[in-house]
Figure 1 (spheres, helix red, strand yellow):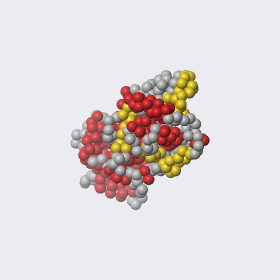
Figure 2 (spheres, one colour; figure 1 turned 30 degrees about the horizontal axis):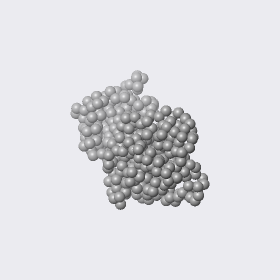
Figure 3 (tube, helix red, strand yellow; figure 1 turned 30 degrees about the vertical axis):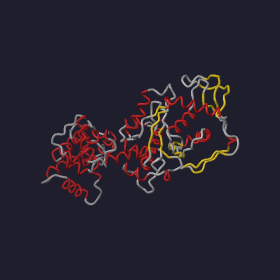
Figure 4 (tube, rainbow, N blue to C red; figure 1 turned 120 degrees about the horizontal axis):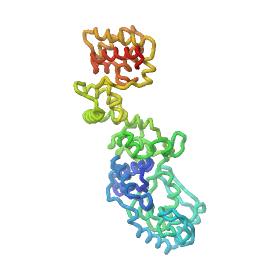
Length: 445
């Protein structure tokens, strides 16, 4: 098993699509599970788009997601002499031939007429292989056509460069998206013509949108950098992309990296299209934040609160963190979701105000409750709850809970109301209830 060698071979274009990085994740996990090697090859033969910045984006995405590789990075342009030597070998053996044909310049994209080299596809029988995900695949040789492997400007095309580099790197398994299936039917004859062993192939299902069409930037964030900028954790994105085409064999969804490595197998990969669900990814991001060690979350929490200019003196930070961590989906939400714990100048959600406060009798209800809270011998989570429960007299506490929540926090949702009131304390709670009641009466809220 330790002889297994897989690779991630992106063509850098400036942004790393989630479909491409998912292939990297599957290759990395397969190598780690089997004790094999995971290699990185930058296919930078597109000299227009393969800039240093584009290559850096690939490297940054891999580092962010923890996709370490086992040998130095290979740059495809450095292997040009090997590509052309393989072409000459194919010509000499009759597997390729020169012809005059139109082709595109690799640098300018301009169509030009000149001598190219074509690979001669077999004309009889079938091309077939056992795909480790899709099962047995076959295509009649008569349904294939010869294709260009060297352009008229002398530059080798993807097909020959890709195969020669796989041979040179000793790649044993090629795990990639099923948009490459047609390429595989071209590449297998090249491997055979060069006298090289054919790797085993595993084609992963396409990532699609809600309509079943290929997922793209039109459907929302589609590139790794966008998810990073929006506050998704690398662990969450890694875990979610793994589940787009694979399952652990049970109902588990949130897995540690060690569990993924231990459980991963190509046998558990799915062949049907994988539907991208941003809500599911957001939920998973929240799950990872909830699982973050409290000390780490507390550090992040204080950094975010401090950066927002919120004063924390005298606040029960540990109590607040306990309430906010389990409700955090993005770290960027922290200041907005807890500012009311630290300042009386907290913003009000307009929809929550309209729904919960702009009702007849609410100002009187808030004033009445403020007076009752003020008269309690002791004020805290339990005593506040018991008082409201007594007022409800066995009915729903909603008529009190909802307007009070918006009044003291400005938000329509958050921690349990009585936990919130306990953390705020009697003085702040009473003052806020009366202030909001007054603003409702004078129309300033």
